[in-house]
Amino acid sequence: MLHAHSLAAAADAAAVGVSPPGGASGCGARSSFRIRVDVAGLRTLQRCAGIALCLLAWIAMLAGFAHLWVAAVHNHRGELGLGIDATIQGARTCVLSLLLAAVGVPLWVVAEGHLRRQRRAALAEGAAALDG
Image 1 (cartoon, rainbow, N blue to C red):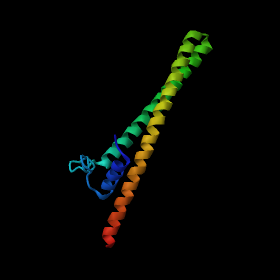
Image 2 (image 1 turned 90 degrees about the horizontal axis):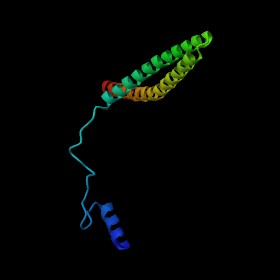
Image 3 (image 1 turned 120 degrees about the vertical axis):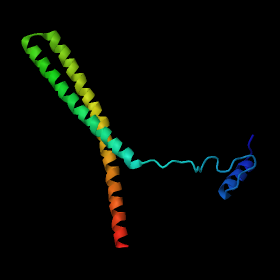
Image 4 (image 1 turned 90 degrees about the vertical axis):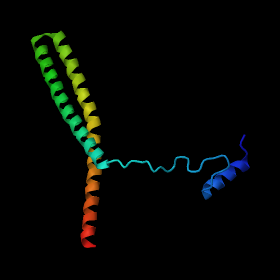
């Protein structure tokens, strides 16, 4: 069972940077084995994934509209069973396209913003190097 004085001693030791008795100092806080990840490459990949999802959303929306048009033709001819099936398929495809766009657009916009900030920072560093 921990007592209040042992908790206070542990907090004081942590503030000073000394390991409390029986404890580990640092305990994984620092690592020399960390790998620097190419963030710009990942942002470009994120942007491309967002664009691809938006293109798929656009194609799915067109397919949904085509199903709804086929449903209207079937309903006009009096083929109600086929018209209902085409309407349901068109509605499902349109909802799918909205879901794809709901995922793709934020991916694209967020990645584009990060890449734009990185480009501005690189240009500012280049201008500072030329001035300095």
